Length: 271
Image 1: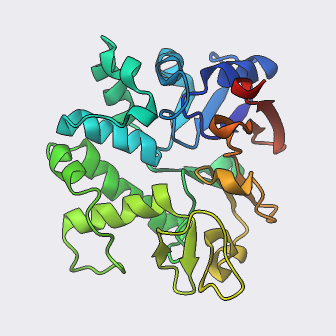
Image 2 (image 1 turned 180 degrees about the horizontal axis):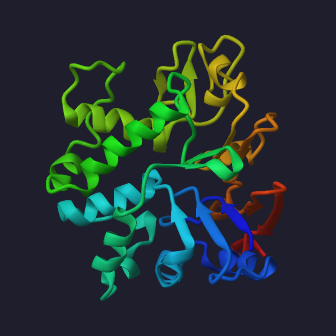
């Protein structure tokens, strides 16, 4: 019996399958935690969804920005971006099943056994883990409730500059989703910089979220994906980046949770 976490699949089914075979993953006794972005940009998002749906009792997913975008396109009847290569998914006779399956998933997970927090983009430096899980539950109630379509229609409105109790529920939803699924850089007050996706300069006012003092003092394990550009490197023993850019020609990374042993599979698209 083993527990694993794996980085962004993004439709790279062949590499995903190879890693499961590498560790002899057994759905009847092992469990897999996925950090989100199951779909989009890669060649076989449908294959990824089919596999996960088939073994859903043995997987847990924290939703990523691409997953939420696909769900939003479905509910809002909006065309998906051709670059996301989701035509096969939207043409599938099981599309509704796959959407419902993803929509059941949370934005964050806490694994007491490993003292571990998992989400797609990381942990807002201004939130304790307890508060983050509470905010994740609020957002989940929004995207699973009767008004889910309404909340998805406001998901891409302007990001609120800071959290306030007076924010509308739509703004709170958007604020929470952005931190859990789009965060990379923050300023000293942990405000999101959604424009910078690559690097900081000497005179930059922002830093990677995991370098914020509120994060560096934590002892809990944090597992995240989303940020392929850093190639999984955080320089923090307890902060594990698992998106190593498979869909961009890099690698897919799977980590066994008890010993933190990593297994990697190079992108098959560039072989």
